[in-house]
Length: 263
Image (cartoon, rainbow, N blue to C red; front, side, top):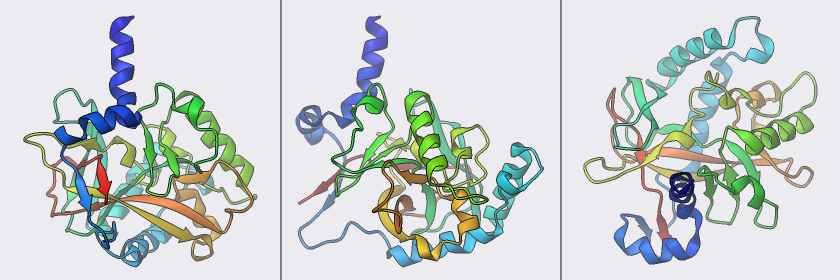
């Protein structure tokens, strides 16, 4: 029982503010000074890469092929369009479990590497219950939370919100990132591990607000995020991109710095 509690605490402590404050001095972190933007590249560059990829992907919604076949096809397409493809794989960081690596190709500095999937919560919305024992809740700079857990309550909430916002025959978000075979290969950013000594960070988080008017309805099924509440947010979507801060070679693990300090 004690071992289980310690394991849950190790996952939760990164979102417990008092613990973060006490331990921040011992952690490597990205520091954004006064007047600087928390942007690695312009949002338009990342959005352009995404819009170039989406039309070439095939969805299980409109295909009779099994999900694994569609996922494999889209991985090859992603390599052709972006020059690389990422996949989930055992992490090289001791004790980290599953991670993300570059399966094929080469990532250039300033590239869109992955997207952080999940349900989007505004700061006044009830994220407490799904966050219990959940190491996949990411907090954006403006207080929006992204629940990237693909299990239990988080999974049920995400699927419910996608189905609520879907207008037949179009699906309002990607449901396949919840499975072993995501058909949008970039929708695995929640598995990118934190860097550690000997394993330096090569990507950083960048938040993008995407007008949904620029995404054709038939391509919404590849976007990995959905709002917890509907209505006032139906004209835009928050995406959290992982952007390369250096070149990443084939076979290398994708690693990020979890802590960003804004002065």
